[in-house]
Image 1 (cartoon, rainbow, N blue to C red):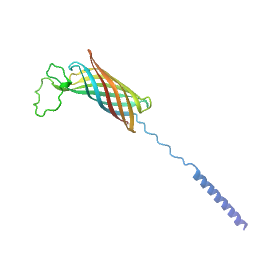
Image 2: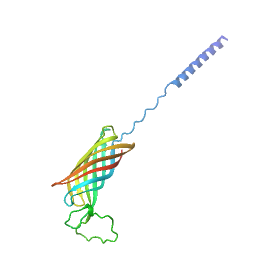
Image 3: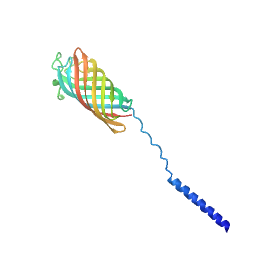
Image 4: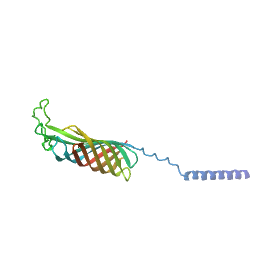
Amino acid sequence: MRISLLVASKLALLATLVTVSASAAEDAPVDAPPPVPAKPRLFHVGISGGVAYQTVRVPMVIPTAYAAATLGLHAGYNVTDRLSIGFEVSTIEKNMGRGGPFQSFDPGLAPQAGCNNCEPPPFGGWVKNTTAVFGTLGPRIEFSPFGKDGLYLGAAAGLAFLWGVDSTYGFGGAGRVGYRVRIADILGLAVEGGAQAQAFGSGAYTTAPYGMVYFRPYF
């Protein structure tokens, strides 16, 4: 009888220890797996479009000012959350025409509609209608004082070119300010305004304030 009581007391003690151990195991915090850090996306490309008001003082085009479409393409690398460097090409394009081979091109003489019954021009001769392309190709820099998104300031400078009315090259630059938001982890959207200028030598130049929107995928 004494042995039975001893065995029973030991079994009760063992059951108590098992219960306490199980309760402690349930109360112990479970180590959650560490969060996976987001993949850094340091590279980006972008495409932009908008409207510019360009003042033109170049040979082969009458002194004039007009509104025209502006397009751009850029790519870059995010050095930090606040600073990015890259490369861009931006253009302003305008249809122009002239009344004779020795006259200057005039945006006001650009054709307003196509011609379905016109005969094709003879081989050779002089150019009557063309699309003038004013472009700048060179490095760009952006600085975002409040982090990778939000307000940003930027600048670009490099080779300026004029195609269409005449092949002319010079120096161009632009300054900009804008506001950028992140639509998704891999896509940004920005609205910006700025001004650009080009110098082609011998007093020839263009200036153009502009406004545009750009889309920027990140990689």
